[in-house]
Image (cartoon, one colour):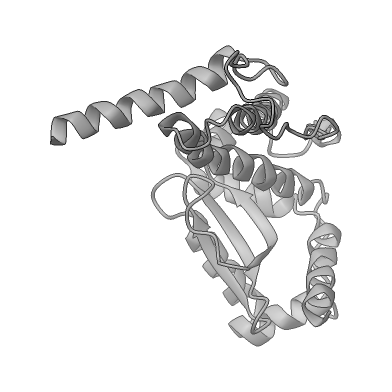
Length: 247
């Protein structure tokens, strides 16, 4: 029985990977000739996600153009696969195949691709700041001091989170219930998110983010990351989320 379960999991995971690797956006699986005419069809007006253009970051100090271009392509892959999986899931639902192992495995895979897409958008979005620091009179700065004792104490904790062994993300989250700021570690895009939390600052610490330029010296990469934070973007996320909390 145990061997059968392992074989089943391997087969379904292999199928999910095959769908992603072999299909193009908007194609999905072939329609079944036996599908019922009364089966609900997917929304033909569903607009696919579009990869954002972050080429303005080219030339950013501490990040080689080659490393950034490679990172952009990796991000674009998450957008492509998110669209493909959503298209395929919709097609399965239309064919009445939404209770199959294949549907279930693609549902699980969706969160990894989708979160990988959104985290990269937040990450690239909070870069390009050209060394300008967060002002001490900014509401975000004041809340950081309130929750961590000082800005330096917060930064030390954020950096320590990013230096943890393993792949993942270091994220400053706003807890929408208490209004408290918390540094968290996200592993593999879809594991470790603060439930209901709003990301304020996002740092990618997967190997692809730093090894092309810094090898194993992740600390040097984190230093370069901090030198390029666009604090105007990060600071704007805080009042936006606070306003949403009050509604």
